Length: 230
Image (cartoon, rainbow, N blue to C red; front, side, top):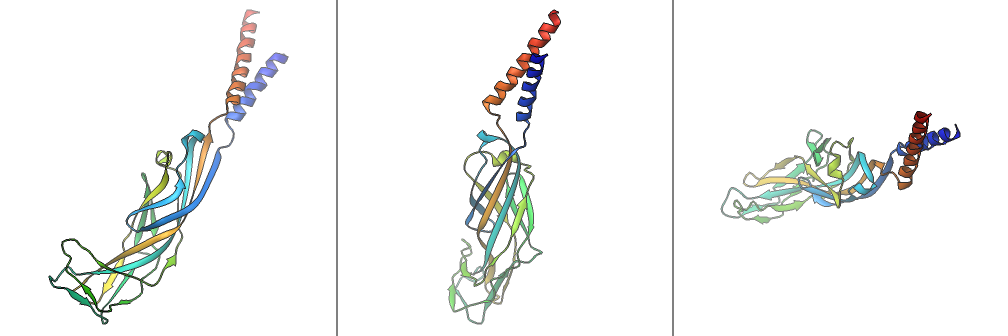
């Protein structure tokens, strides 16, 4: 009876150890300077698969957005002048949907309401760049911090496991207003900010756990064999 009790206890203890609550790892970092529409690189590490099996992911990206406006000459083969009477504005509104993606995970977010403000010309010469689409970039004077938070249940867990840092894809439109009819306008947003990721995972059982379970099962098999021999 004592042998049976010890064997059962060994099995129970081993199974309890194997089914403990999952572990959590959280990393905080920064978003490298980038531009909306391009890849956003962070210094957040991917999940180390040697630690166990990934079961969930939560990502938070806190962007600081500095919008910029651009003017280009695509209509005249001769240079055009962006005079002080001309102006350009680029802005984002809540109606402009931003997308952040990682692997097959994708989050749709409301864009921040930020604008370059009115940028007046100061006599810049804008050459004809129809073939290369080179724009004269005029950086706006305003910026604003916005919290674009994305939380996932880890639908594409495989994409988060490996070596290296997390790199997200971004896209999002905006509106441009330019007063010079001979020039074309464009714009976008420069991005910086902070980021964090939390990994939920089931850890790899320690060797001692397996040993305990093997001992318990062995004891049960010995008891069963003795019972059968009686």
